[in-house]
Image 1 (cartoon, rainbow, N blue to C red):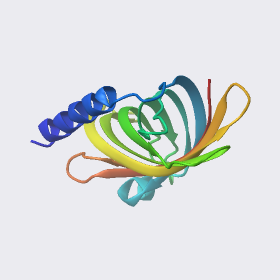
Image 2: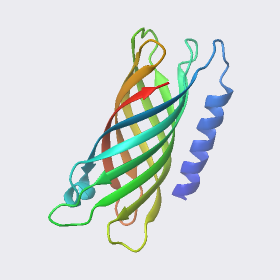
Image 3: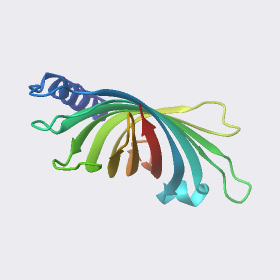
Length: 175
């Protein structure tokens, strides 16, 4: 049931972002980013702060329609506490991005979406595939020919029996 709901919401959001009227040119960007990943709740009890790397494809909004779309692929590496297992989490997320109008060099935005999460504890025979959601805030900084961004997001992975949660703090560049 959860999978159908998230999949349906993801498809509707993607179609909505693609079919928005374009009064100005939308811009596509490729980006790379990295930062710290802070485990929360049960994941925080078992692992320490780790790192992540991210690749992104962003379709920006326009002045008349500030809603854009972003697809992110992210790898998280979290070290186990007290000689516990390290945890690796791969994600692919589709996100809607609402950029607040009026920003010239710095444009604040809200980001939210859903996606697929693959996690594996070191030494485990199998990895887990789950769905999840994310949401957060950020700012994009326009520079000459490219831009940078900084953001923080909360990820909630719907795994059994409890949800897994993490907060990546990300700094990146878009070309």
